[in-house]
Image (cartoon, rainbow, N blue to C red; front, side, top):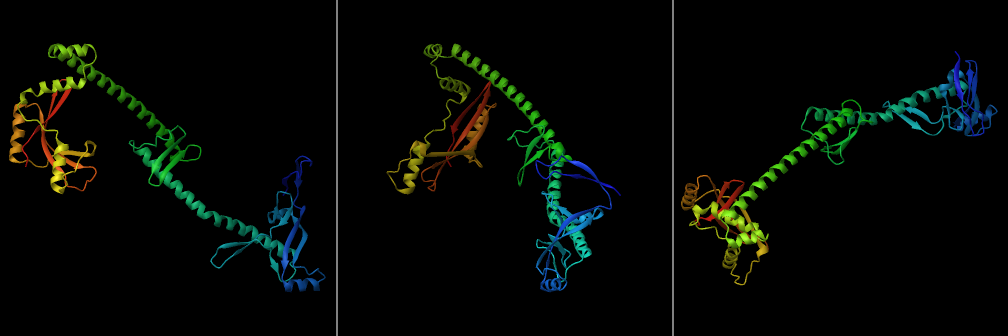
Length: 375
């Protein structure tokens, strides 16, 4: 059967490629390199050879057996004797870079037989080497497919926003770290993930923009409502001096809020207020507990933590009931304040309780804390 092969130029000055017809009767002259053992060297001398350990000769390989020939980039053709491959007892194929060694000068069929065995075992050896990589590649592909399937099935999942998702690439956060998905390299379900991740990202951007605009409009409306209440209070209830300062733009807003809070809790004006004397109270407590009469707690060293009280005494409960009765529309909560010293947090803290009353009036929520009996 005729075969067509391309003859490649060996140097820039060589002739251009030509297509030649190769018939089954043609042959290629190739180099065969092998070694002779000591016994083989003796046999070579007996048969008129040179007796050298390394032997190199030219042989004719028929066109039908060109699979037994390897040609390097320089166009040098060699019989597939080196490297050589052998199968071990455990059915693994190992490679040896040295040429084969013979105890007697080999015949041409011996060389062809060994070249054919190397040709076959080389492919087995290559598959054997790439098998672990193939298994890792398959496992990674299964993992990517699994993650992509879960992502596409769960509308709540999102890709990482940094780097920003695109229609062709995105990153997922996984327990093993971030993982990139790319339509140019991924296949199957994993290839669909970037487009869906980008769609969800854009939807989130639009929804966030809508929420921000809505919140901004609500805040603007609330601000306008509060401003109207403040303007009405200044026009109707503020003193002339306060009105003058307001007209000059010098009336502090805190002063107005305090006055509005007084009006909101006017019904409780006779109720004792929670004393903001935590600094003095903690300092007196620490001096008594440690015996250090010169101990001074600076304002920045006072640490206060507050939380709803878990219990109430009878007297405290009575105060809560009274406050709720006077202001039925208010929310009354018993609060517990723990006062400690930042410099020496291991020293005993002071716990103080108060009744926090919250009341919504128009656009404002007013809060004021009142005293309750100690334990």
